[in-house]
Length: 332
Ligand code: NAP
Image 1 (cartoon, rainbow, N blue to C red):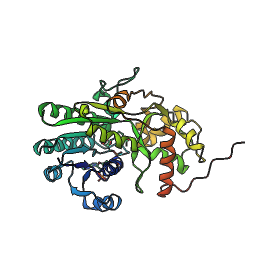
Image 2: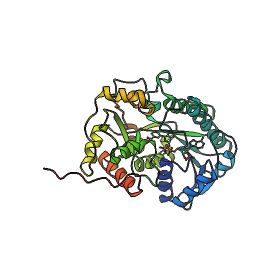
Image 3: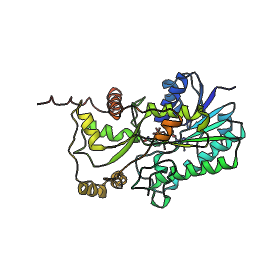
Image 4: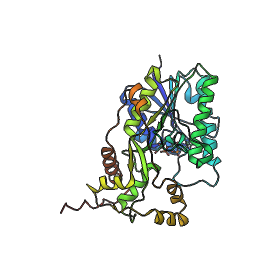
């Protein structure tokens, strides 16, 4: 039986850790990149991975990418920090790309596809109760990214329903933090980078359900290997932690702003800063999600959020993405 796994979006933050996890467990890995320029950086970071070119926006390359693979882990999807001019910039590659990957997989006898979705496909419009895998985001209330993830996951389940020979499992991660593998701070660790860089006057009252990228990589492997994972989605996110709490944890080691910004000030700054507009929607909002199903079915565990935060900070400093921050003031 083939031990070859295709990981889409091999240049990504999550994919890098997923590939390391798979290689560590003895799998052979093929990865997709969308340009030769990205391939060079990935090949340096992850030697031993075969790289092929395929773009979510085109059919070219996907049949060759999945050929001979037993499993496909589909992590690639647009994940920009800013707001696109039009939602289709995110929705089309997410949905059409997922269908391209699934069609190629079904056509080549792949056993199981694990799709990286998001809690963005679970939580929007669902407040006031502990969210589980039965919850789906309301696309009427979604921003472009949330819509892209919700519609892509829905499309994947619809496809799976029509192709019973192809198993599908879905991972719904919370906000992903944890060490970066190269000198590129992705969207989800950018807030931690900004805190460490000292450019923030204070911290907005945003709440997150986080997951460590290393734990998430294990979850992807377990969703691929565990028999009963087929046909299931799995929330992978810890208990709610606020940005001010994160700042307090980092402040144990580094000198970072811990002052909580009043909501009105964040709203005001969003008028002039388009990137802050997304944040405004999450001000003071709860993020209560249950990862019990992943813990039970996959025997999956999460490390403490403080470990993830401090390891993220250490990696950002090591790769020079923030000037070495001043150490925390000694306790009085
Ligand atoms: P990332 O570092 O930006 O990785 C995204 C990957 O997708 C990159 O390899 C990127 O390629 C690729 N990609 C984007 N558009 C593409 C296209 N049109 N064709 C081919 N490849 C394309 O983001 P990440 O944090 O690792 O995210 C990985 C997955 O996790 C995504 O599905 C994301 O929605 C999901 N997720 C992330 C978070 C989070 O907090 N980070 C939370 C929940 C879910 P390039 O390198 O060439 O751009």
